[in-house]
Length: 337
Image 1 (tube, rainbow, N blue to C red):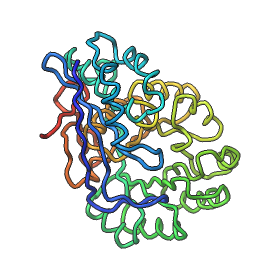
Image 2 (image 1 turned 60 degrees about the vertical axis):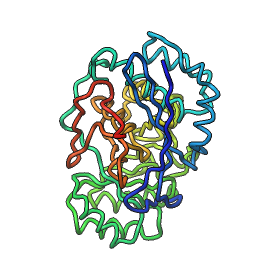
Image 3 (image 1 turned 90 degrees about the vertical axis):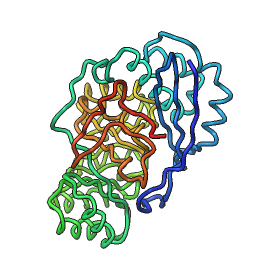
Image 4 (image 1 turned 60 degrees about the horizontal axis):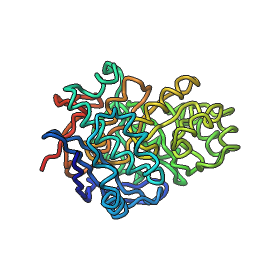
């Protein structure tokens, strides 16, 4: 098995702002694993909040090339277990390797990934489209540019309720709110009353990630379901979220890939938690991997590639929120160049 490394700067269509800051480009690393003329692809993007950088990814991959380039008939699950001791300090990179190996493995079996997992695509699950923090006029403009059945609206400003009320005048779509740790418990509970009136479906991660006391208070008193994001990173976090959140948003890069994400979803469902998988603004390589988990989910946020000026890959697509799987086997992703 041969490792090929490619790095990109993914340019965004619009500056993307959340409560923590603004980004105009997303550095990304694409991992390709080749064996007998077949390729599998995986992706990890840089994220300052999680202290991850593409230069760091590339350096570590080169240093550990021999560990990765084993010729093996391991299952993706076995390969993840093999890699974990070497990459457990870098879940983003472990994710890219897991995606690439899973893609390669299922290509070799002439199967789509969801077929390998014995799943059938859901017809009733749609991805939201994300509207970053901006002026109200620009947020309305983005909604008009991308008519969509579900919007995730980023908040964390002094005028959050006014923003949602104004956006509601221009759309009958489902609204989901993501405050990215920008609110207090009292603010969240009070906002939930008004946001419910405005047709909001749920609130994602309103409090700082480690505020478990506040999360419990919000869980008990919110008028809307609360979904964990920054509070649910790795597998052991799922159980912590029980009775503190109504659901969890699992992100492949945070938890180390498809293999642990699937286990996290299974655990969450066993606890009665709602299940969601989100993206971190990546190309169609990462987005295509996410799509195969949707039969297990209540919600999905996989619009990352739509936020890019130019997608470096092709694969699973979104049409008016609906998921259209690639004709290719594996995850369905391929690079354009």
